[in-house]
Length: 499
Image (cartoon, rainbow, N blue to C red; front, side):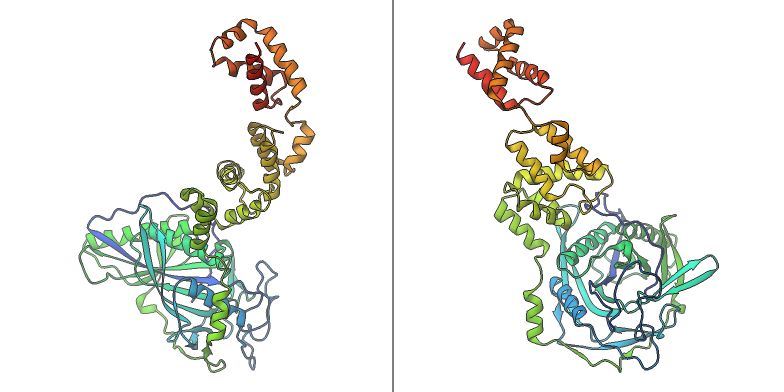
């Protein structure tokens, strides 16, 4: 059962740098169950729209309301996206899978059961590889991926609970891992890499703030060297990467403490309270529900023919590993910086679009990472909502390359554009920031500065090269920073040769 908890802030961006939890003689065994909302326009078994934030109970029909006599019809696009996810995660696709009824009562489940897959899921036996904190690669096996519909949403207001069924019937895949994860940090890194992969594959936006990616955590601890798993607890519905890490850190320490004190860990379902940073009991083992799974009588077995599977394989978009390989091969980018582009899909997309206007990838990469990203972070903006779009940035870089503005002025203009939303070229025009590249005018200024600093010029002629900077600085001062410094230096050198 998927239970909705209050929305929590999502942590976006780069991977965490915190060290893994130190457990001494103990080790943690962690498995994850991840619910991912598929990016379809309509629900899994009816034609109702999938839209976030709509008025409650407006995107509903007899099918997703579970009214008598209504029959489900499977959404082909949802199957395609589920297959994409399965292939991207290196799974074996089952030619035939079967939908089942998962029976339980909850106010946001109008039929009294959820249509899911149980004994014969869509895919099994995959894996995801990713880099862990010491730079080594970790492989986490995927046990199964199955299709299912989402439940509705309970809204708690004071002593009342209201039900919004707009979400009921939304297509989900559930991704179940093997218990291959051994630390809170590994769990977080796995989820970050999984979300990135799903976004690249076009399977889901995986926006945790909108409930498009939710995670249940199974965790136990045991003494190192023991073959048998410890008693596990399940932490339900954690919906931010940071909270997954925090919940595991607390729960692992709680279980270790119980064992050290001679107690026994109880098998139970727990929640996580981000306010306290602690997990809490929701229900114990004896309260666990019997879902009484049986085959869904209103749906035929799902048979994936070879032609459809080939179509899905051919239409999977470029995945993160493929993009990284292309960046290294085609653009000779430094691997560390290229990984930043790949791990932050929207930044990579921005880079790709900018390359349409500016064909110097290394210079562009430098500006993206060192200037644009830094300023966006300072202002609390993301690359997606940056007012400086790829074409705007490349116009700025072309002006620097053409000697029309200095690098220093370009950085100032970029900051102002992000603050005001104005186009960089408009700011340059309004403030008259273009560099002076008029040779005749700059020659006159060179002569003027030499006359004012005759003794220094003699010393420069006699080999005190450091004074070159002084003369360039004097001319920049007279032009309020607008003189083209490279041209100024060239004119001073010319004057020295002719002296």
